[in-house]
Length: 195
Image (cartoon, rainbow, N blue to C red):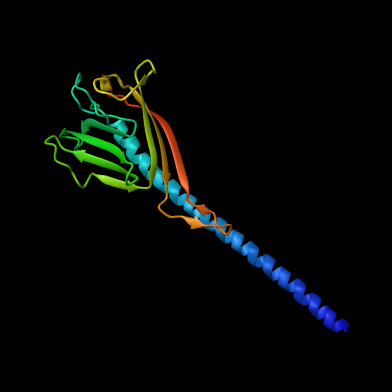
């Protein structure tokens, strides 16, 4: 009888220990998956930020003084501007770069056109999973410039806020769906604006 009781107690303790180890392993695995997804979201955001910083710093580069650098069709989620689009340092070609968010497909679209207005497919990209992109424009006094016809020449800086989501999701043990997001916000001063 005593041996039978010891055997039952050992089985219960062993089973409890085994279930605890399995639960711990499950928690560690879930944490690793979530951390990897967060890292992927951050990598994607870094790619988007690299494009935006590069393009915004080129606004008005090599454009003739007095010529409007930003087209009057700018809004809180799109901008089109003139710049030197030729990577060859010896030849200047003024073209346009347009960045816009299409809310129906949650993509950041980057369209580069040469001086003749022909799109350059090798320079144009689409990035999935853009939840929000808000651009706030400011003049030289730091006052907001609201989107509208005729005031793009007043813009001297921009605050860009981006929220990006990964295309993948993960269903946690508690049935909650986890979809990682990355946030970025920065004020960008472009030296070629309003020369």
